[in-house]
Structures are given as structure tokens and as C-alpha cells.
Image (cartoon, rainbow, N blue to C red; front, side, top):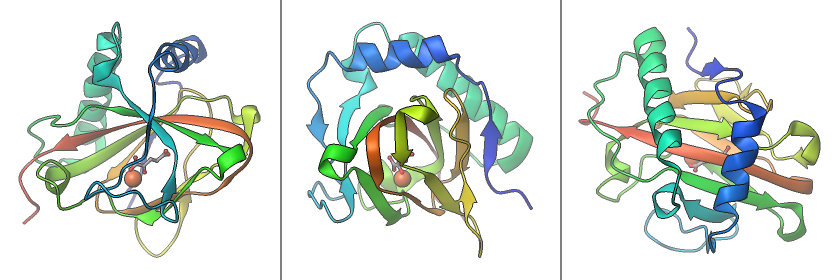
Length: 183
Ligand SMILES: O=C(O)CCC(=O)C(=O)O
Ligand SMILES: [Fe+2]
């Protein structure tokens, strides 16, 4: 059973570079975790919320279409809304960028309703070392395709992590689709 959905070339390299350049103009927040606490042992990254950035509406349109396609093709979850802004994350080797093993389903009002997680690889794979997104849908680990523009979609309850970036900088974009609790 395939539990991680991969769409290579979902965005072009030029589109990814444009998203990085446009979001880079906005001041970034340090990553706040579920519960709004900083824990650099768990995650070290800087975040920009796409809804705060002008001219990025086309990105959300594309993300919605990609989530819908993955849900039709594979998951068949009951999805109702996108309750949270997509976030662009910057993981830098210079400050130990990483994200330890976690599930995206949290205690917050929106985080509790997360059902699918979509991650878009914004950076060229040669621009950084480490920084691998790995998902554990069952007893084995699945490494996400690092290609720029590739989209990976998985159930938000699946454990996943981003290994430490050991050189360079990795950018990613994450968005969640929400719906009623699993039953
Ligand atoms: O940057 C990534 O590849 C994953 C980000 C992530 O797991 C999250 O935002 O919850
Ligand atoms: Fe996550």
C-alpha cells in the first residue's frame, strides 16, 4: 500500500525560485510549534506565512488542485477546507536547521483537524546537504524526492522529520488540508 504520494515537476524551477525570492522580502518568524512554544531541539527553521505575502494567490490555487488530485488518486479522505496559511520554511546549516520526528496533528483548533500534509521542495537539491524529508507511513522510512518542484503528500498523522541541513540552505513550502476527525 502506497501511503506517500509524490508528484515530480508539480511546480517549475522558475516558479519555485519566484516563491523563494518573493517570500524572502518578508521578515521571517522563528518556527513556533504546536502550542506556540519555541523548541529548538525539535525544530530550527525560519517561517513565512504565504497569506502574508502579496502576489502569491496563484500558489494557493495550484496547491488546492494538487491536494485534490492526490486525494482523488490515493487517499480518499473527507477533506473540507484549508484552515491555515501555507508556510514557507528556511532551514539553514549555519544555525542547525532541522525538524525532528513529529506528527502534524496537534492540539490547536486548526492543527487538530489536519488530515493531509503537502510539502513542496522549493530549493535545488544541489544547494544544500542533508535536509532530507523522510516519512514513516508504516514500519519503513520513505525519503521524499528532493527534486526542485516536487510535491510530496502524506497523511498528517504520519511521523516525519527533516534531517539536519549540514551545508547550504533548504527552502520548503508546507500546506495542510483539514476535515472532520478520522473515525
Ligand atoms: O520542511 C519539510 O519538508 C517538512 C515541514 C513539516 O514537517 C511541517 O511543517 O510540519
Ligand atoms: Fe510536519
